[in-house]
Length: 509
Image 1 (spheres, rainbow, N blue to C red):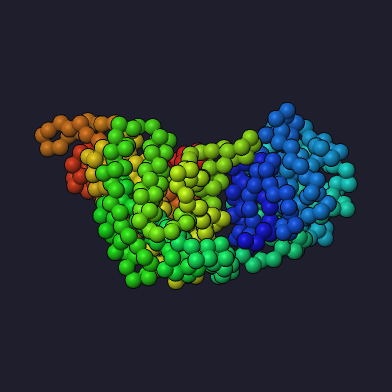
Image 2 (image 1 turned 90 degrees about the vertical axis):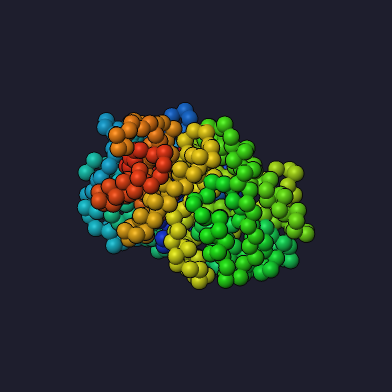
């Protein structure tokens, strides 16, 4: 894999957005914790320091070791990074009288600065800090200001080091992508060669070299990630790839057979394993969401262990892990805290003697789809909404029973088919129904009912790192609510979730 840009994470929720903007420039980048990044930086062309919820003046301020970076590689310091360079290099950072947060406009841009080529004065930028730089570091040169922030941007003489107190990665910084492009392409001269076709060519070659003639077992889910991973592996090792699709009893209605039918004609070697009873038995009486995830992950691996023993000399387990899974599962002091564990991130138990291969580990969801398109995968399959690995277990709040699974499968079917029939499915990034652990009073005919409440969720997003709720038409919501209550026994109330991520996650558990 090409290692072009290194992004150091200091805990800002915007760090992933920096990576997304860099990738949009067809430049490969990686995120590492500020205190745990590669010691060998010879393959990197530039480094970006991200923002942070910490203050550089605090005792707990993250302190990166920049000895192998400053003056040796082009460096862009964003927000916390800009204040860090100032505070610890001869400048001054002090608390602002008022928190500088939200939209601001550049009121001054120094002439003939490559960083601001194509950016005009009054360009909108996004501030998010409670400290402010009061004096520049040694050899610092002011290159931009806003009305309220004198040192909105600066560079350091004698180094290819630039620093900005605003966030170019967010949507509200109008020319943010242009500034990143100016720094990475014009100043750091990073090649723009990270394209879907280039990724496929490089990954297939890498897989061939890594796997040789070894046999690989892959868990298919019917989703985009595992399908693209399977096709990539199939191109690399052909008949040595063994695909297994496990029914964990928590799939969508009729999904087990539908998925098996879907893969017919794709040339993949696929085996279906119906282990629904095994999963539901292990989950009986369990309500804690993290415990449910761990049980499903454990049983999933146990099923794979059973199946892998039926394949002679299998050595690898392939997974459809993608970059947001990796980022959200990292938990160190400072960088983004763990939100939830992911069923397909992490090591295998000692008793399972398989090595892990993850072809998509460095890709965001939209990049996976573009890679899939370059591989010629059916657009309808690539357009499928993401579906959680633990399935409906994390959409059933509380304990899981076969009856609750039945109810939610029926509700989910009505909702998803309704989106498709109304032409709304492709306008939504992810949709699903959640069975709440409460009953509500209702009236059906002349009878009083006391039945389940369903929450519908539909969000728009690019990669799942951030998301906003979709403004579905009222007529559609009315129709689908009526259909659910009339067709699904056990439900008498439907609500619609209008929370964004953050602060809420896409799934409820």
